[in-house]
Structures are given as C-alpha cells and as structure tokens.
Image (cartoon, rainbow, N blue to C red; front, side, top):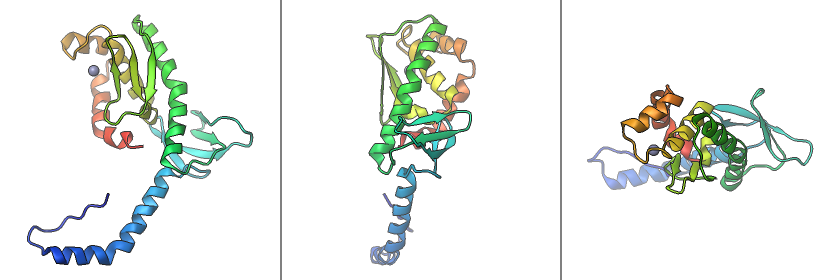
Length: 195
Ligand SMILES: [Zn+2]
C-alpha cells in the first residue's frame, strides 16, 4: 500500500498530477522493498530469534537449518516468495517452539494436551479449555526470552482462564521480567507479525 498525505485544502487534481508524475519512482521503491522482504538468498540477512542471521547455501540436499552460535541460516531451496518465506519460518518454529513448551511445562509443573503452531494475524498465542496451546509461528522472529514469556503466559492460562491478579502472579513467578517483555511485544509486535 502507498499512502499519500497532502494538506486539506490542496486541490485533488493537483494531488493526482503529483502521484502520476512520481508513479514510476513509487513503483520502483515498492518493488525494491518487496524483493528485499522476500528474497532469502545467500548473502542476505533475515530476522530470526531477534537478530539478523546471514543466509548461506547448503551444499547437500538437507533441510534448512540455523546455527545460533554463528547466526547463520543454511538452505538449499531459494526463498523468493512470501509463501516460501513463511514455509522457512514455520519449519524453524516447528523445531524450536514445541521443545520450549515442553521445558516450560516441566518447569511450571503444568500439563498441556497439544501444541499447535501456525501463523496468526493478531495474536501471539492462546490456550483452550481442552488444554491445547496455540502459538504464532512468527514468534520464531522474536528473541528467545519473548518466546518463553508467551509460552509461560499461555501455560498459566491452564490454571487461570483470565488476566486477573493471580494469573499475573503466576506468570511473574516464572518470568519476573514479564512487564518488559510485554512492552517489547507491544512496540515491535506489528512489525514482527507481518511476515
Ligand atoms: Zn492471556
């Protein structure tokens, strides 16, 4: 989407003329930002676990992997569309998130039924009455303490199905810095949700 802002009293004809004149440049910028957004290829960097990972080509036919020590992503398939980009993030999320849920549930001594990971437009996680935990795959782009906070938040809903004081006290027991992490999500959330 391209939005144009102009003073209230500016004649519409003038605005249209301005946009027409600038259209090639606007389209060029738009195409460039789209390409930068989706092109995950060797030499580029993409956001993972709150940092920018450099992309390297894998020489064998293995599945894409990431290395937290060197902040590197290795892949074979070129990622050149929003769908493939989502596929890559989903793959990484499917590897890490269930493990983190398992760890947190052990730590809290709380049992959940299943964990489901998918892309959601506006929420990071949810917990159902059937004790299922849903996590947004886009969490894989956020730092690990954020992922852990969201997981602890959802697991705490197994005990309190609301956001009242006892709920937050339980969250705080396992995640004392939760206020800071919530603030991070409020500030950066919209950007990170747009994959
Ligand atoms: Zn909640």
